[in-house]
Image (tube, rainbow, N blue to C red):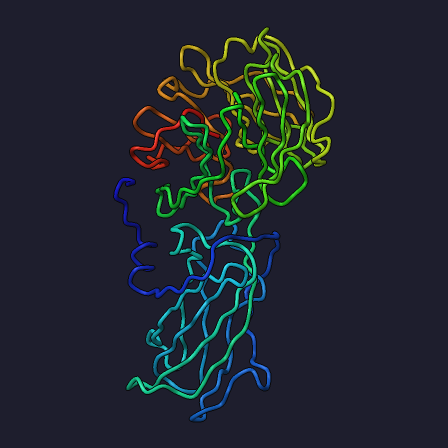
Amino acid sequence: MPRAHFTRRRLLAALATVLTVTGAGALSAPAQAAPLTAEVSAGAAVAGDDVSLIRHTVPPVIDMTGKDYVPLEWELTHDGWATVVLRHQRTGITTTHPLGNGGTPRTFRMYWEAFDPVNGGDAPNGDYTWTITAESVNRVPYDFEASGSFTVVRKPQPHDFNDNGSLDVLQRDHEGVLWRVDTSYYGKSLNLATRRQVGGGWQIYDRIEATGNLGGTAVGDLLARDRSGVLWLYQGDGRGGFATRLKVGTGWQIYDRIKAGSDLTNDGRPDIVASDKAGVLWLYPGTGNAARPYSPRKKIGGGWGVYNELSALGNIAGRAAGDLVARDRNGVLWLYLGKGDGTFAPRTRIGAGWNAYYQIIAVGDVTKDGRPDLIGLGTYTDYLYRTTGDWRTPFAGREEAVLHYIGHGFDHVA
């Protein structure tokens, strides 16, 4: 079982939400929409006891990018109590929210946190319906019902494989089974939500790397290198799994490190960097085409053999494009600011003691502040580093993260 952790989000779900479940999963397409107040059209409500819906503030598109919650309200012609039911159309996940008037007669307000209490993480993107019913102050049901719909969207994240906007961590166990751990970040706390099996047979690979949208879809993909040096692309299906693998390269056994997910060329597509055993770093610009996901390599420079860990973070310093961080064998962390053309400014020392981590992973925007973040995996404790946007001090203080179940060992993380 995971370490005990009880957030405000889980408390609200436990106290105020009744569940009905008929499925599980997700869907997505990023968009932006301002809140609105909608007048109810004729026939939208079923009149009874002269109760009707005057207005609501549910927009047609709710963009949850960077948000912990969104306020929604309904105004009726009568006071009393209301019940709002939200249903994700593809999965059937349904939540029921009893509402009082909150001191404002006839107006019923909720602060929807887009939390999925079935799977314990963020609610999936995609199409939803809402339905509202009401009772009198004395709890006598009105013969009244109104309904509508909305779509939840978020900006795609490189480590989101089930399209709910939150970080997914991939772990391979000692039997070669790959697991996807979905997480939830709330109140400065990153915790695991669910652990799902992706599939077996992954022991044939000696490198597995989450790449972001390398193949041109709206969700994250994977690169995996087998022990003969063949590189394979697994495109995410948006439901926590992957399409049939595609062979995208050979000869990759010359590299001891392969990293991806950061847009180093400022074209909106994630790129790949790989360091060979002679210490030369190479750039493979991403194309967005699954059949040929990268262009011919370009030499970045030599001397990278002094590092035992690389991470392609994304734009953490607010400059032209994606950046890299590299850890040397003394545990010193160095920042390479991207110039936007696949090259970097001279390195800047940004910390020491990073040899406490056996792996450093770029995870995208976990903290919902618009900047990519970093995770350090330790033997006993994992930590999340929020980025600041300032290249001189790119990381804020670390926050403890809970990313695996006790008793479930693994030999590779992506």
